[in-house]
Length: 606
Image 1 (spheres, rainbow, N blue to C red):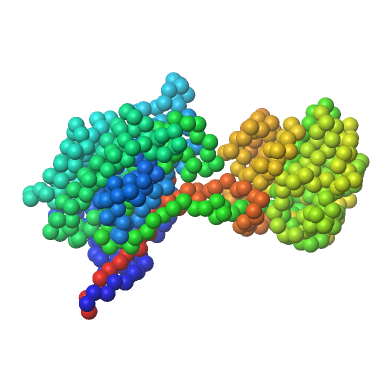
Image 2 (cartoon, rainbow, N blue to C red):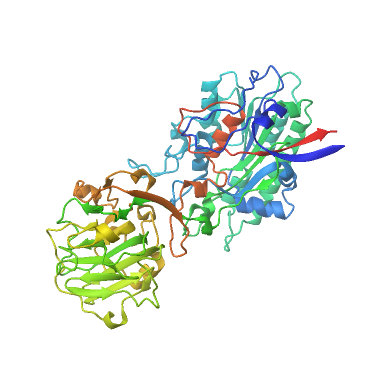
């Protein structure tokens, strides 16, 4: 009687299956040590070794393959699902957003090199033209394999001569053929050979979908894959089925331990304007990847939900306990408010204590409750602003409860609007000025050239006894931001990546929340104008105390980090996954991909 059980990849799994290579998911910037101690035989002289069949489909978006999959037009891909890890929401690139053009060649280069820094598909500064695949200088993973073990045998079969010319040099067998059908036949001929074992790596490139999309269209007017593309996928699916049948008919197929990868280069050309909040929203970057082994547990990997985007911070803590925690801009003359210009100051604020009364939070002022410049401080449960010699509160506690002490992250926005001669304040994008002060006239003079922009303690503020707060995402604009923009964008982070329509007006930007900032006394200005200040606009943090955390506040909109995009298969994962399966340690190469952990099934005889 057979009994099926599931096990997680572990040290136990390596004993059960000689040759099964198992790695934990990790970035390849670190040393990748195999968890198995088995000595793998040299390729070609014994059956028990890892092999990889990698099938690359040019121009097949994950959306298109998914449609073919669900409408029974990709039955052979579908038949692999019980022992495969699949994503229809893979990414051709997660480092270069909103490129004017994303090419199939860039998809090739990302997949074959394991990095996105090769320059292919990007505009060259010298010519202004897109760099072609012929100029690729970054080594492919085929060459990396040969560097580590020259006895590993590699075959390459392609229907595209440019792909052939770019990657043939490191293959023991390399053939360019006239059609996908001929490519399929050549691969099967190698698999069925009676004289030699198949290569350790067989790389197959099909270009039928790319040709179909280029001749007709990849997407219709509604953004759905065209019938032409679906039909081309259906044809290639047939070829994949024939290749798999030939492979699994081999006498030693299971002992040879094949990893079958079916993947695509990019999502095809998209004629409409791409307006995406994340890489997942760009149809051109949408790919399909399937990784199959007869022992894998089935899994479909989808993109993470937006709700999984927590705000992760590594930031100074401006604490009490008789400390004088303060951070100041190096040059006090910077970020002055000229009398004839409008400005906006915005920051994110989080309280760690319930006694922030009168504590100075942010200022460019001579002293607490002074008459020069401006400052922001706590006042009971509210935020209070000192604008010149006038006090302005946020909304009453009943409608805006405990903003300064509730232990949650909030975005505070101050608008100094010279044109309207008004001061406006917002909490979390909502207009929040006390009802008696909503039409307060903006004071004429807010200059304070002898005192720097400061977070934390200033003269006369009781920070030593009451403080306990963090300030991050500090922004200084030389324009009055409109209310509609503040409402929509108040919680957005990593502005140097977003570069919204007010990026050119952002003259000072201090994230103060990055992991690389941790315990660094200098908090960098990362606005586009920082270099012109020659370090004088950086913030120096004294009496350093730091805190870290992870927040899921609904009104925050943190930019996705690498892990958000690494949840699915990326093109750059293919080299790393292949080399790990072959048992090759890759410590010195800066691959951008990650190696996924697979879950296995096994059959036990009773």
